[in-house]
Length: 266
Image (tube, rainbow, N blue to C red):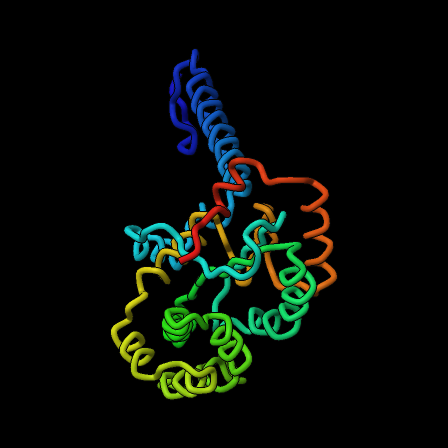
């Protein structure tokens, strides 16, 4: 019998929705699998350190420092001290400057001079700070004459003269004259210091220290390792003293942590 309803097409009497159901279930299964895969990816990615995730700045730094040699930190104190404090810092970092001028004097007096801890400083110049590489070079060239720590103090104490201003931009595009003034203040041979600074003699050392920061997944400055235990961010002296006391009580570092900290003074 003909179908006289023009809106309803002719269909076989045995027509079945099975193909439609099959397509629906196929799509449903695909959605479930995609959702499960997304959850697993996000969970795994969340558990990774920040430096293992995609970060264009850190990725570029890794490429720049791919061929850097072994780290060469600057060392202060008795090498037989039971605790090793390692600092990764940027000379232009404001938080590093506050730590260096407020907390570190007490760290030196009460922890380093009393032989409770040995101190190691690693350069970690961040690319957003335009004058920090030059500051690291100024300090490295002062170290050549045995006065790294004196230059370290001048640089951090005078950040407002050469570092970031209130608008977060550098207060000068020519930091060398300011650094030279610091060099004179601490009594360096200016001819030797200037030749060293202009030739970038210790760029390899600066790069190697930065590469070590990336290898240890340092994500901000300053970052500290207390007998191998990572502590990110500046801290007051009381907190540092508690960490050193806890490390002393715990006893000697593990072999792995010791390998990270046992760097020969250069």
